[in-house]
Image (cartoon, rainbow, N blue to C red; front, side):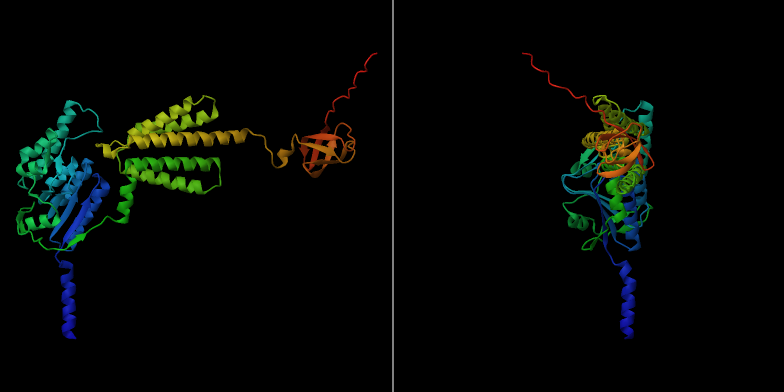
Length: 433
């Protein structure tokens, strides 16, 4: 029994240090959610004494701040980091190139490419001074770690200054990467036993052959955030929330539209917090709501409605100030949401305005103007039948029983009526002989 207890204790001690390779998959734009995911994955690998972190990379690029944070996490990692651009046809463009170069082992699958790291500000044309400042800053950032990774610094700088891109073979020949591997087993076999110099100057020998691979998946929070911070999805959620809130305002007490609208608006605002937003575009979106309201109130034959749709579409397109197209609202989504939102909003507003202008047909006010019949002589008080009900009534003019009356007013539970004018009797003319 004592031996069994000692064996169990030894297993418990050895279990946390069980050799493994922790695999992370980054197939998205580089933004705060991917930054958090990579950071947690590297921490997990360090806590479990993994042999290496393997990051499968496929990205069109992303935000500079998130890119810098990921690079800093990789450079300070206690566990060697292997970055592998895969599958065939994938790329590590823009921010992805900076991340690839920061790895202890940079690898690519056949048929992949990397590069195009020139800084972009909202897709706009930069003046020469701003362009030079951004280029110099990012070039210095790249030099600060590529030199220690023993990679070709001068070629790496051309990715920043000339926006060059390289195939897997070109990147290997130019000493931008270390390995070309057809798949993960091939990659782990090629780097097994290789001595690498860590960023802090220490050396280590990679032991990756035949190591079990443990997938580290994004948390539920990261999955939800990754979905809603897609600019097109965030814009769609915002539009749904606006429609739901408008429905609640026009039908107070419905509750469900109000709750749904509030949740959607809060989710959209939360997503916008992680994205670079243009406030001028927000002004355009607010102006579109004003146009929709005016279109429903005034007869403009659709001119204000079209103006509202145009403002909403333009505001949606310009809403997210993303450095790459994947981080902006897609034009198809902006147009579809704008037309749909405009038509639905104008329809709901027109219904609400017509309802307010219509005559009340229920309750006490609904009796005004209704026709009835005197059940007893009114001189001036008596009984009348209106809408199938018997009421006390008073009339300023005498009314005989059975004559028609019309309701002109209400005093408590007494109706004020007056006789209906009868057309004068006419006689047929006699034929003269």
